[in-house]
Amino acid sequence: MHFDYVVEARRFALRGPNNELNKYLAMIEDASSSPTPEVALAKLQAVRDLIANSSLPERDMLLAIVYNQMGFYLKRLGRYRESVDTYNLALRHVQSLGDEAFIRKGLGKVLYLAGNFQEAANNLLTSIVIFLRLGNTDEATTLLLHLGHSMADGDPENQRLSAANIRNYTKTLSGKGEVVGPDMVYEHGCIDIARREVRRHVPNANI
Image (cartoon, rainbow, N blue to C red):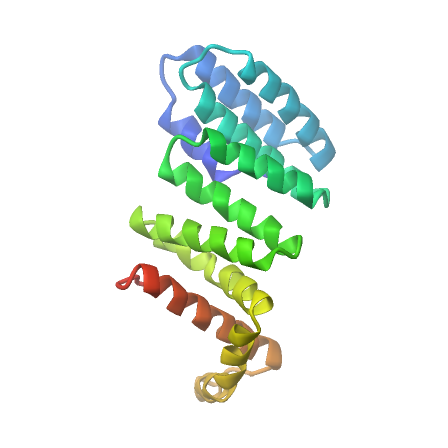
């Protein structure tokens, strides 16, 4: 089951007297709770069609949410190109910075899986910067490793930067009594290059 934060946040934020709006939010929630990606996607497509033909003032916001959910399930099904296109549709309808951050988070992850490392890094970095500016440090921090992998896999120079710091990471981790393997060292290298890139855009970022 996938229950995206965007749906949850919007559902609670917009709960009130607007019964039609709550109806659509409940339909998105129900579709996102489906037992398989195939069922979820089919339900979300049906909800998308209903929203597209509605006259609600919040129509664009709802379309951003439903396209975001569809992008996630297309990714789960390995349909990466369609997933990227659907996330981009979500961005066309986005109504808030918070929603944009979550959509770019999903878009960045699927771009990485599709092998488009530079675009993945761009979207993940934008997502992190927005999260930080909104005060959501936890979400920003969870994306550092994803950003670092996208940068390292897409740029040989960053791979060298990671390798150049292997001794320092090994020494630091060993000094903490941790068992140090090559995967751990590489991940710390990725996080390091991501953190430094983020601080170029948000100098006082506490991540």
